[in-house]
Length: 330
Image (cartoon, rainbow, N blue to C red; front, side, top):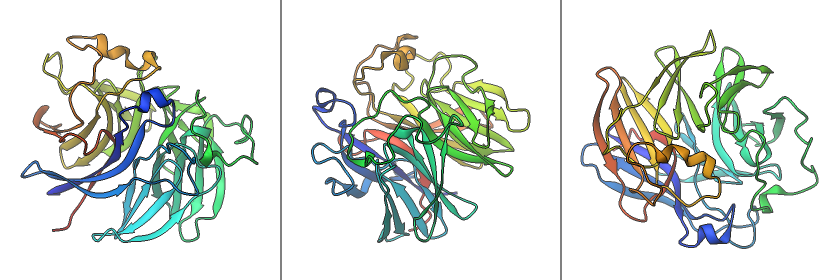
């Protein structure tokens, strides 16, 4: 079992909401969480943009990455960085004009697979060269049906509203699947009619897509975990770790790492948003929309169905959590 976890995310600008969409986060942050002491420590940051970002107020955050051997693949909104582990030496950076608001990067079948969320596409690349092998629209459409191939979207702050908002990629058999926030489902990128209705017709955004005990586990932003049968493509169970408790965490639930029977679940600090429909769940129970608590990691024993520990981050270290990964080094 891991003694430490890496949390990838970002820190809010104090005036991010006033600046507007695509300008909320001013510092990308990779944080180490010691599971024994509960201590959070910053191990990597990015506070400046560059050629692959808008000139002013770039949205700086590390999103959901992955580990492949002794390498960490860690995306920002417009780039995918490769670092050696455990020293976090930067080995390479891949970026393309079709990258916008990247939410995740995955190594699957020897390819690097990236969710270009702002363009509703999944980009498959050669892992060595970064060359694009294919671009897959997450509605089965032409990837350029509503965007201009000649535009460098890395320099654009926002492309909202998104038609599908893909945020995570996984495999069922030989097929690539993407989790979509707009439809609150997961879709087979080889057959857009083949879907898993994660929210069961509700209006709650969904993320992740992690394998556990031959099941797929998704997070809902209201804190529920959704267990799905990957063969039947159906929801088996929707489980709320905190039930009806009034002292439950307040946050945007996203980011999941599973070790044995322990689920480590991320909760981002709430921020102001114009998308009020996405935070309707806050009106339930004792919820009232406010800044709430800092970002959290919840350790849930799924076998006993008990929350074993809640780790609360200190101020200013990491507000949004996108991904949770093990750090198996001293």
